[in-house]
Image 1 (cartoon, rainbow, N blue to C red):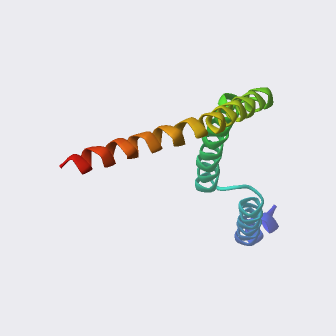
Image 2 (image 1 turned 30 degrees about the vertical axis):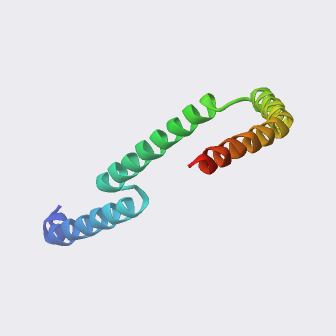
Amino acid sequence: MQWLVDFAPYIIAALQILAFLGFLVLSKHFASRTAQEKNEHELQKVNLRLTRVEDAVEKAPSHGEIRQLERQLGQVSSDIKRLEPSIKQLSNHVDMLFEKELNKK
């Protein structure tokens, strides 16, 4: 039992060194609280962005709705082309009326 008393300081020092090395290894393998909080904050940001993107995709028009809009635009375009000669004729009449009024003065 005397040897325990004689080697107690060395045993305590060795245990402290082992504990220090153990904590060092654990600190390298496990994330610190600040790193974990930072990662949680980043994850919240990404989740918010993902939610916004999902909402935008949900509100976006479907393929069928886009096709319907294309057909309607095509119809409007053909209607405008059909009205173009009438508009030109009206423009000519208006120009002639302006000339007539200008010639009166």
